Length: 275
DNA sequence: CCGCGGGCCTGCGCGC
DNA sequence: TGCGCGCAGGCCCGCG
Image (cartoon, rainbow, N blue to C red; front, side, top):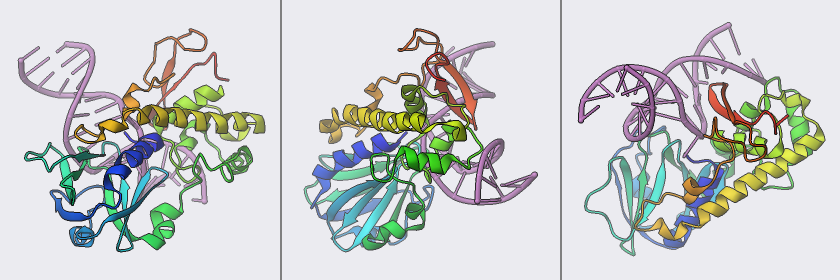
């Protein structure tokens, strides 16, 4: 599920409910996620409180008062939700319940268990092996620029779309927003990365930002439902231009939207509007 | 070093 | 209605 906008939406949804809240109890029902939940997880959390929240690419970082941070990744199907009270009956695939001093509960659910929850000293987050290799954030206008892309793509042999999924290049784009951003930029997904001009890359940078921002904005509209509901960010309401719309009419030209597989991933585009 | 394909899991929607 | 199949928004790893 979650690409950058969904993780950002999750962060914004959780923060007001969790910030400065003490953790009174932790229950882990399944530890075998993508990586196992550390044995010391419950002990490290209990009695401390949340002091900060940030997103790095698709990672959600939750800082605790004892100088330890939770590094969370939602994988394909992970969600966090806050319930007003600890539910008497958990939903299937609720793997972790964190009880707060307010009586509310933070619950991690992940049917496919591709996500993970790890612990790391807060001051070492940026040097964590999984974090330090991440490319720039798409919204970082200092480091994520057309010039940066031009330089990075110069030695790439493959097509642009799968490259956008490489978190080492830019952190946070997934399969949906790769297709969407390329459509907005008017660039075909199968263009060789090194063939893109500086001008096209400028359009791509702007398109990536606008597509992600739009999705964040639409997710934000349902943040109020974060407690009591299922915590699902509002991105389902987001109208995709091409993703999942094969055979439908292109919003730009009225021709049919195409679907094909690239590097094993579904890819959508309009061959009239993208060149 | 790079790019690709398989694997990890469960759920869902589709066609028969 | 039931069943089997293919597919799903991420990431790591091994292979060539």
